[in-house]
Image 1 (tube, rainbow, N blue to C red):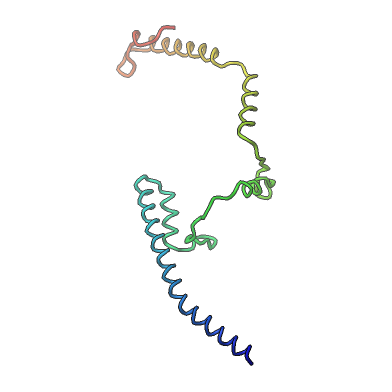
Image 2: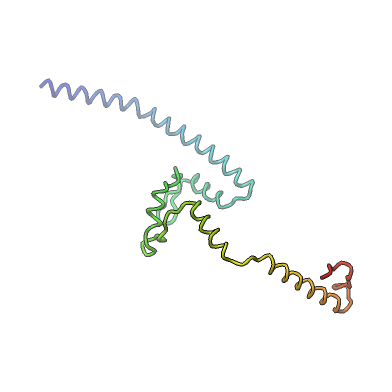
Length: 162
C-alpha cells in the first residue's frame, strides 16, 4: 500500500512539473522560430538584392512551412553537410545503385599524375605561334583584297606585319 501511495504521489508530482514545463517549452519554441524567421527574412533580402533567385525560392519554401512534391517538408533546414565517409559510402556504389564507383584520392597524388602525363605531350607554344602568324596573314590578305565599302574599310596600317 505504501508503494501504491508513493507511486501515485510521484505521478502527481510529475504531472505538476509537466504542467509547469509545457508553457515554458512552448514559449522557448515560439521564440526560436520567431528569431529564425527574422534571420531567414534578412537572408532572403540579401539574396534578392544580389539576384540569387534559386536561393530566394528555397528560403521562401522554408518560410511558408508548406509541403512540396512527394510530401517533402520545406520547413526543415539542412543542419550540416554530410561527412566525407557518408559521401564515400554513397558515391562508391555502382551506377545502378545510385553511385559512380568513385574512389578517394589525395590532391597531391592527382596533381603529380597530371604533371607526369603532361610531360609526355609536345609543347604547344611553337605550334601556336605558327598558326597565329598564318591566321593574321589570311586576315590581312582578306582585308586588303575586299571591296571598299563602309562596312569593310581599307586599313593597311592597322594590320600587323607577318
